[in-house]
Length: 60
Image (cartoon, rainbow, N blue to C red; front, side, top):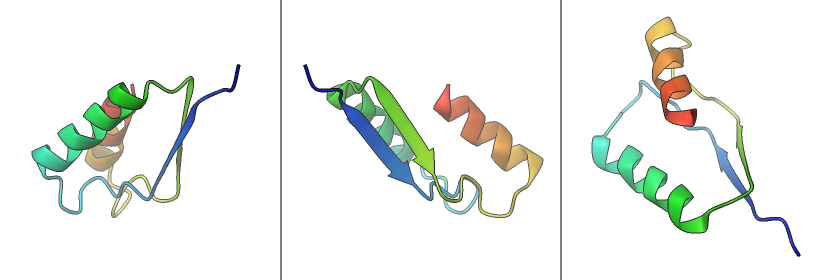
């Protein structure tokens, strides 16, 4: 059975955190139902603690 992997890149939390965009990505992840999600690239826009906290909250 193949493994389903979802790769997202350059989320840039803190740049333009539109709730509808974040919700759409969350729905996509739920719909695809991957065994593994890889988040690469820039997770935050400026590397601020608050941006890292938002990214971590989303990725949990």
